[in-house]
Image (cartoon, rainbow, N blue to C red):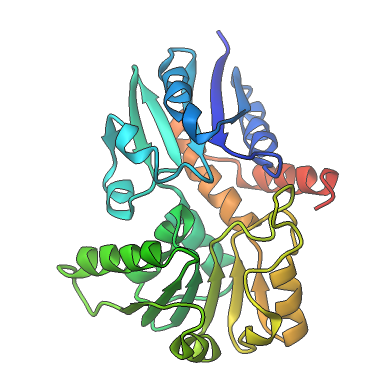
Length: 292
């Protein structure tokens, strides 16, 4: 009997996850279908009932639901509970178990494709939503020296900073210096100019969105000596990355993070080793067909 995995988010016009995950299922000749389930916030409870159905293996969760699904899970693994965001759900006989594969995918892409080990580095994060939560916890656990967080919703940035500090308070080793700052704070501009890593965790610039063609940061503020990491993967080169290249900065797009987090999700659903090369090729192919 055919079983299903869905992608839960809104909107989903930009996503290449269906093509990428279907290619991985087909590689192993699994009778699985990966579908896009575009879900408005008011529909979230109903779609999760679909995930509980015996015909559904699980789901991925993307913007804007990664935090909202947290209290709707029957169980959370330690990492998703610590981060406060879920991007992968596994249906265990009708019980929904939430996981976070974004953190592992983010860090693997940074190290393997960006060539940066975050240990001892100064980092500025744009955004404080679900992806930012995963990225910031991953960076803090990997030994980042400092984290500056900003968000259009100041309260959200301060909440993430507080959650990080509380989580790291009883850890081993030195915790990073964590600050939430407004964009117009002179200390934010100072942090930008001196950072080693700038990460865009907002959806600004995403294809098929209202912000397509926009950048989350003015070109003149891009730090020239930093790696600029944009988790947006469609288009392959966002305006932020294009501006960063013109400024002489090194850049990393979001495609590798997408694939690596998707590989971890695939392994949770199937118990098989993810075919990374197949997933990269499928994701790239879908992006080029979309004009990315």
